[in-house]
Image (cartoon, helix red, strand yellow):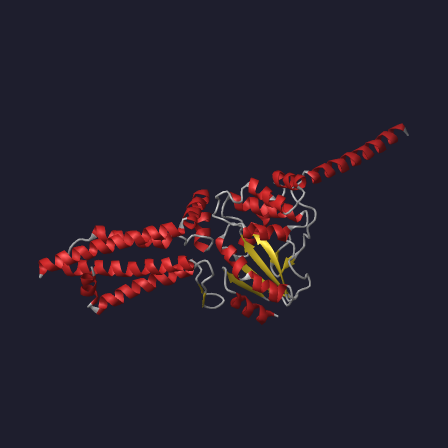
Length: 160
Length: 222
């Protein structure tokens, strides 16, 4: 399982790509989930009782970086279509990002203002089931990581 | 002479009918009479908001736009508000007004309405605190009509008065006014705070930010 990871991240470009995806998800998600505030000045804040929520955001962001970078490697190196695997990674990332992001912040209000009652129901669902949805997103990303690693192991052996 | 008497009698009758009609309208009317219709802080009309928590003459007013079902408002209530209350409100440096931005569902509106029925019996802030201490998931029934009445009962409110107030929906327009005021002030999420001092300076803080942020802003405005 670790061999394909080593193989991909031997190339520093993929480390940069994974790190960019990780940071690119973690910071916006922390902002919409109100762990980081930009005004009146930049401040990070982890309220008591929100530790699990923040931990899940970190895991979703890290797994997204890992899985998406591995799939980009696979596409570039083998010129194979990894549509199902990369879409699994993207799908997992989107679920993980959407869960809880609507809450009572500007995104939730925009959704409610635009879609009315339906928006309210969607916002309530994404807020109430934030933790289970993020766990589901993590499960999807772990499964995608497993299948991608397996494919890479097989394809690399064939290529060698 | 007889004609004049009829006209005079008619006028008196019309005035009496008018007075009785107005009194009846007030009893079933849409708003409480116990409001300072001109109350405002800076550019924010707080006329329909909560009673003032703390000293009315405090040099700073913190206006909170919030929703009883919002989890971030819950976070602020439990993590930041206690220190603000202890260091600024209890010491007379600041006071607080809550203005409803009840948009997260039907129970948000009901909870806001119920809080003003508690205000009629002088227990607005007790009811407000009880709601934030009892918050659960959005629209899962924790703030439905029965539970809101149960909260009032647990505070020892006169249930006949409370139920008649709540069931009449007489504060619906008050809550709607507050929502409109919040939107007019550019609140795009809950909680949003506008801090106003006696010199007319205003500062907006969005979200359930930590005490340190409020301390910096409040200290800079005193």
